[in-house]
Image 1 (cartoon, rainbow, N blue to C red):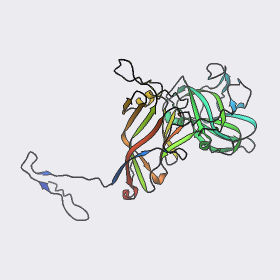
Image 2: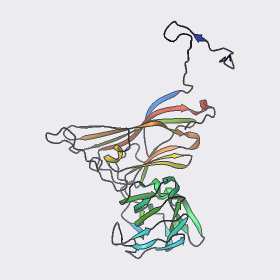
Image 3: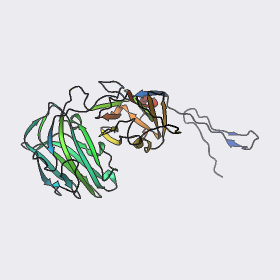
Image 4: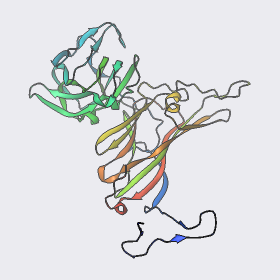
Amino acid sequence: MIKTLITDPQSGIQAAVKSDGGIFPNSLAVATRDMLSYSPNVWYLTSETTGSAMNINATAGTSYDLVHDGIDTVVWTGSTITGTAWTFNSTTVHHSGTHSDYSNTASNNAVTQFAKGSSLNLNNYAQLTGWIYITYWNKPISDIQIQIYGWDTDTGLMVGNTINLSSYITISTLNSWQKFTIALSDLGLVGGSIDSIRFKTIVATGTLKFYIDDLQFVQNSVGAYNITEFDIYPPGGYWTFIYGAIFGFVDNISTSLTDGTMPKLSYDSLLGIKPDTGIVINRHNAGVTTTTFIMKTLFDLLMWGNTTMNYGYDGTTAFLILRRHYDKPLILKSEFGDYLSATISDDYSALSRMNIAVWGAIVDAKSLKGDKLI
């Protein structure tokens, strides 16, 4: 017989068998308690310019510098630096005009360049926009990237930062044009100058095929906020556990159906708003964007899973509230600079109100004593 004792190493107190004469005689009573202290709360995602109000015109200006559109217009020159060559005047599909740029079976570390031939001063520019049409993005998706970055052909050096385009689009959407909007701050190009822009494909395994059209640098907008990021950071020295998100929309729109038993809510809009880019939601961990979700329509959010919907209409104004519940808490750690962001670049000013909030709890990171929670 092996005799086992459960003993506290500090107090020396031993666990004892409890006999209550019930259905579990001579059993070991076990009790546990959470060592962490939680402070529940609800937080709005906010921006520096508009607070929690997201019903703004976040579009850029109408003036732009066209980079490439499949040579419908003679602008910047496309060329292959390394790897599989693109077709710079494909007629198969196009967002506008009659041509687009096609990357057929992109190779690993292939680099394609669009060169202006002279320097472009980006002082008055806000974003890089374009349209992508993906025909094949093979699994595993984490092994495939489309990177974009600025370049200086005179120095032969990269300018700014590299971004991964999958953080700005829905890679599971195939055979349909998607607009991407990249803030120049993401590219590290605010106030800088470049003479070319480069695309680099990372295809460790699998296959990648796509078209690009109407690539352009867009100037700042007068009378609009331009691309705006709303975010939430954990307080310094703390972790934030997020259990879910709340999306709220209000507008003067009729959502009633005559003799209907269901509300008149279009699946392909947000209370009548049909954005080009959509609300881009990103989770950032230790400087890396780890999760991306793009919401353009009511259907997008409902397909996210674990989503409940509430709605109402008073004869003039309709509201729509959607709650997304996470199966596991999303943890933001202050020591790593983690945060959650929602970026908009479309015009939502027609809505009476639009907000995103999250609910969860704050935990004192100092009490974790180096424990690794994921």
